[in-house]
Length: 300
Image (cartoon, rainbow, N blue to C red):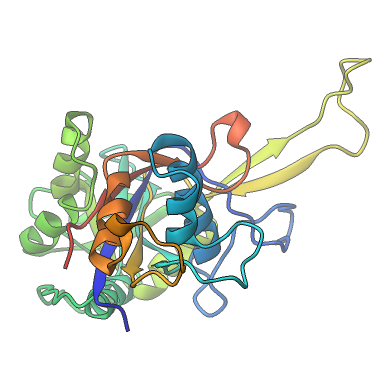
């Protein structure tokens, strides 16, 4: 196992299209989803590739050091990279709210899986017990801005019965996962008032049906009209989604390793240069998709 681990949080500042390869109904280009939950995710290979691209272009660790950390670009059989990334999992999903503009939704299954992934990273996480929620019920803090009179809450076209709960411990934890810049102050404050905990089944329904679906076309450069057969529908993960990936570092395998990069601790310190910066993940880079702000938990 790995001696040096951390958790990297990815906050979507734009909508994201990481393709899943299969169409879903009328959607031609669907996003990647876990097979058994239908939750959106980003494959670990995509996370690693995007992080490597950032180091290739933004930090003075080009060439040999990048290959030590991420592996050779062309001769992968030569040695493995010293950095390991898991799939990026969904933690908070934004949903349109009748009051409060939008709510971040999560569920007990997602939070328990976060707790398990913390343990995989060698970190103990305590999450206060949540109310038992049935389908059509939700838990919010007493100060929730999404709650209507009559203890009701409306997300998209669905009405939920509200249970007020002490979510202070959970909201305090979640706020530490958002980027630290002052431009995020209002977003961190919104977690106190706009967090909604749903049942597992209701959460699954929203992440399946409340993603963005955009109509895309291709213009014929000569006629300036829509090219025949070039109309398609693309699914995107909405902006303001919060995801995370467990990151691990091991002692480099490369024979020619620089002196300042020979330990797992040194590898992790290099990776953490990414914290507070931004990477691009998935397709449609030229139209601004897939911009994530990165925050590392801080090290174990």
